[in-house]
Length: 460
Image 1 (cartoon, rainbow, N blue to C red):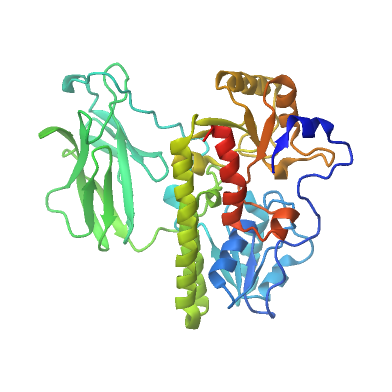
Image 2 (cartoon, one colour):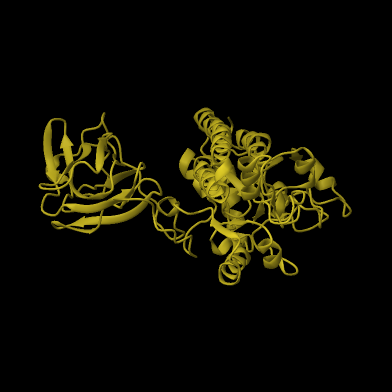
């Protein structure tokens, strides 16, 4: 898989682009008419096939060598999908064509089940415009009288998103609703009078905790404190209210008893999909992927109750494989020499970066169509020199020139730095001819492509 400086510079105009073959479907056609369904891009199709097993068959209409992003169907795809039992898609502008088809199916056809794989993921979505949560400033003393406790942020740790703030004895926002049998971890950002962020934790000077407010139902949630964060576990449907506390050992330093934060335990989150201001690339994250797989199993079980247990078992077995991928990412970043790499591709790995605490620097942004300025390239070259980077990463689906093996950005880096190696990194939004012939699904793309490439780029 490795592309070197030598191979790139020797590549002639007739060299084939990495793994492209127009017109070849990612999957064979499904079963008889009315059986199975369609999924709107590779990762979702692969998961649907894993969960449905031999009972149902799904089709991915996106050609091999193409991403679902920016793709548009030929002909009357909605009518073809309507002849099956299910349309599985992600309700996000990233796949606007799928949103249009879902709307048409729901409006004009009654017999096809339309399923949003992102349902229930709203609390985990990363906003494009969210400012990063600041890291604690260790190695300082924080006397209680220096803490700015009349004003601090509360953070939903599922998405690292600010969801409210405490301001002079009352809440703006606050603790979010909790789904039944799920949990919500949250933290706070407290600064001292000089603007330094106070470290919280069991081994730190201060610890975060919470208690039930007076005269509230204590049966609906279970509170679990970890020092640096608090988790609310949904036990029963209902409403309750809590008071946030800051402790120093056995001493209560501050609480929000002036106004308790009210919230509910709900059956399930309302499904609103991802909007234009939220990153849709949840499918690149092996932990969030498990939630989507569970959703697929639940929906297939409702569609085909006689085989509901089979779908549940298939999902559990496949989620074990996803959990193994998660563990491999954990081990990779633990062993890595650096926590930053350069990626010549659109910013499609925010969820992976957040979960495993490393950074992929790309000048392209969230859209593969964004332009790159000379200053962007200069900044990348400075970073490469500062971090002593010898391997860069690229998205094989963003090689636009058939005469090239890697994107132009990689060739520019080769020509203007000491970097000699480039490795592919894929968000599993599509597949190539080679990967398809190898029988590689989502797990194999992670294990055979992404994990080795990240080991090379991060020095693991």
